[in-house]
Length: 217
Image (cartoon, rainbow, N blue to C red; front, top):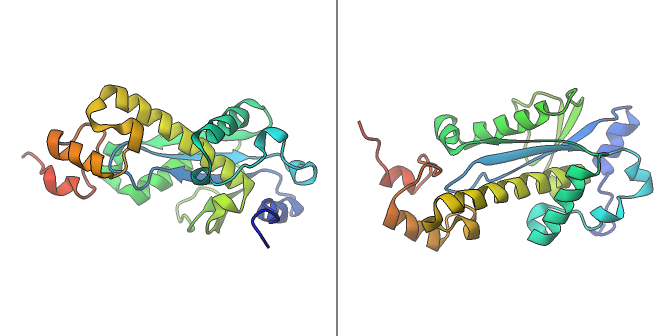
């Protein structure tokens, strides 16, 4: 079945038929960069949309990485403003990432995002691999952000939030070019690190930073 014809409420529908009305899609943004926080989001879409279709404002909703910045911003505005979608967004800083590692930090952000949904949803759809520490029962879906509208919505929330944070950090530390690469290890970013060293939002536990920035005793 082509992506265009695929049922992107397939996983939600199974749970809705089991009388699980509140199914949260969960996704993260920013696991790979050398700087900035990791951000996670959770989103609960109304079950009736499986029958009526997505609102016109969400036409084309997909994995945030496959959308343009303009599309992401438009979807973000609708998801956060329509009043029919429950959502939570959380971030974990670079300092905490260095302290507990990126995997644990990502899982903490996911749990923190879920905690902002009140009450906690009875089930979550998670993009990628199972999260052992997740505070609610889960279904892990490989490439879930392109297969589930709930995860896609969470993907957009996480990506837009993180990109906006990196623009704020760009204003604080313009020499690194965060507005362009969002903290990823581009040639320009690596050259800036070589020239200026690390700044407070760099992840000191990530290569190449951990070899270039020894701890001062």
